Each structure stands twice: as C-alpha cells, then as structure tokens.
Length: 156
Image (tube, rainbow, N blue to C red):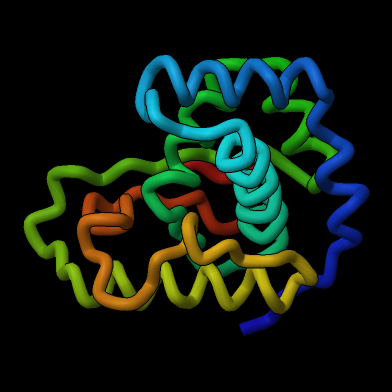
C-alpha cells in the first residue's frame, strides 16, 4: 500500500467555513438528526481525510457509513466539490454498487480497515466514531459496495 503524506491543515482549509456549515446542516437534516456540532465538525474533517486519500491512491477507498453521509452532502455542492477534488489532483467519483450479489461483509470490514489505515498513514486522524472497523458491518457503507474510483478521473 503506497500512501502519500498530506498536510492535513492544508487539506482541511480547502473546505470553506460556509460549506462546512452547510454540509453539517444537510447531514443533520437529511440523515442524522441527533448529530452534535462536534460530530459534524469531525465528520467534515473525516470526509476531507478520506477524499485526500482516495485522490492519492490506486487502491479502492471505502468510507464508513457516517463519512459516506458527508460525501453525499458534499457531492450535491458540485462546484466546491469539483474544486476540492481538483486541488487534490482530480475528480473523485462516488461509485455505489448496491446490487452486487457477491457482497461479502467480512471483505467490506477489511476494506474499511484498510481505508482507515491509509488515512492514518497519510497523516490524518482516523476518528473511531467514523471508522468503526471491529465487527461493525452495520456501520459501514462498504457492505453495499460504496467506494471511490481508483485512479481518479476515470469512471467505472
């Protein structure tokens, strides 16, 4: 696994305070009403870390369910999302695969664990509330095959 180190402060600064507030509000309104302000702030940070890693690896990166909620909100902000991706080296596609009959929950947990490891190796914190890797099949979107597109810029 090759992981590029990132200056986490620089990556986090790519998300404006206004966009950060809107992402938190959207996730709270649409998916997670009991989310605290602290969880929202940490969620945006974990999204930024995930996307930075996804942009800099050829391996599939798989978000935890809560990170994926923030990713869904970010994608709806097409211009700032595209600008964020461009700053990281290229567009990061969201690739759902909900109808994969070969889905294996153990493989999903392993993919989530690898992604959290890549995030740490890239110089970010992997917040355990957003990367539940031990026996948390219901807490990962990876069971549905939700991933980034390796080699950003290429569609799958």
